[in-house]
Length: 153
Image (cartoon, rainbow, N blue to C red):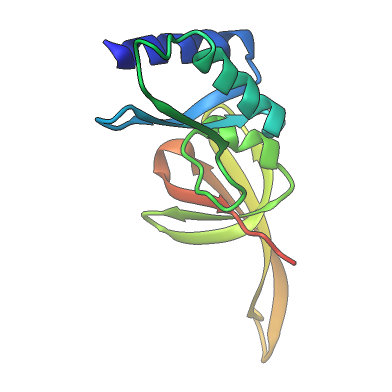
């Protein structure tokens, strides 16, 4: 089947380029192929071309009619895999969990989850007014409902 041919070629290309990984693969009934990739150090146009050529150059156009789009995940796209977090260490993320929404600087990434840190204003323990405190939240990957980079200008 044509889908299997495309998936095998894609997997072979990703095996050759271990720094790249698959985020999404879609193929419509009319053979419109859409591949979204990400990389440990980001994705360049050349990376997209590499994946595109690895597929396109190994399929006979006389036998199969198809269109192929290979693209990066995009700066504002929500993360889909734990592997995407590591390259964003030091950046501000918004992370939604069942316990609420957290916005903070990604300070560490482990095999199990992430740590966010931020400053917050809270009432003083004694007296009137507020004080700035450093907050820290450890979030397991299994608890993340959605995570994305907050882009600030």
